[in-house]
View 1 (cartoon, one colour):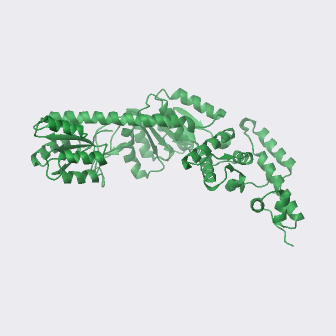
View 2 (cartoon, one colour):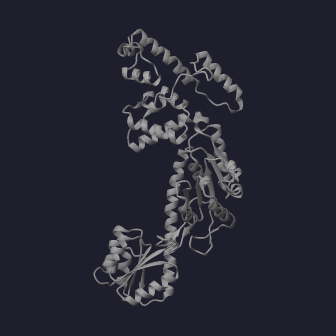
View 3 (cartoon, rainbow, N blue to C red):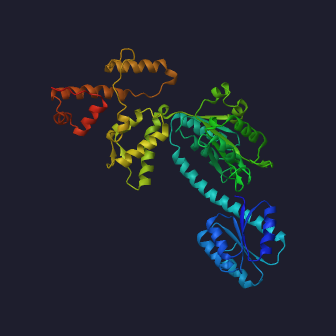
Length: 482
């Protein structure tokens, strides 16, 4: 993280003027304070990367101000300066947490050296902190990409092959399939581990702001640009940038992304300097970019630059064998977050979860599990804890006649579909369809025999009356009135 904003506090106007001029010439934003109290107010109200404080100032001294800074702004680096070159002052300043100590008068070269030293210290601190976080995230990541299906095993293989290189990767898949997790896995297994991983959702930012988010801007570049801002490419320097939903990026901005990939440099909005960046690009989309290229809605040259190694994440409905493991993971995760004992799903609930189509994919499954855990007071989750899924169960009908299919008709229909699409054959939902087909006539028959008495009907069926009432609604059973 580069040094950007500096506070200079000194009661001597000439010293403030000299330091301000020298630091601004180096491109820093400099604020000035004439005494300790003003400096304290400015530090509390704003964010600074470095404070240069004189020891002797009216009101609050530099050393007392240093104590206050250490209490509330521990990340702020402080350099103390004084006209009294005593060992006592130097030792006291360093004991109280000053980063460095200067004796007046000093050459401006000394200030340059101090600023460079501070820059290196901030960079090292940032990298160490980032490395700790990313190592922690990497450990967690190994637990969050769940699945041992053949489709996921192919994804793991591809990650292992592309991670060590700097090749550009395109991750394709429906919303909720975990595209960012894959991008992070590539980064954490690459030589760029310990450097930044910067993610940007191109669809979540207004088009007029997206360019400044990516490339940054100079102070005064437009109304409201009060100070210089680094863009995502500069923030990701040395590491990886993840451009999610790249298909939503405007065409004019696509041309600038292409230039970054070709030239490895960016230019801030309102600036003229070309800034070299060393960034690996991973893009993601839930759209058919090849079709968009044919419609001229996406640049063909950028598509081929990004699509060097494609990774396709199949929807959850096409890897149903991973659902039990995902359910176990999300149950454990949710219960840990809520600090409650781990819940479990009974076999019927697990079958229900396994048969659902999951249009929202893994994200929808996670939210469904979380909702069930929060709303249920039982240790064992049952089908009753997933009413949103149960209401979607209906008896199978013939597509041409609209009549309910018999048990034999359901099996024959599923077999015809499977054999007609043998190359795409996936696990089906025949169990759920048969269950609904058997349940409906059974409940209807019992209610006919009990003349619609739900208390007696529930007793005969061996289920709770509330459960019977839900099933009547879910299965669309009409109650005959005498």
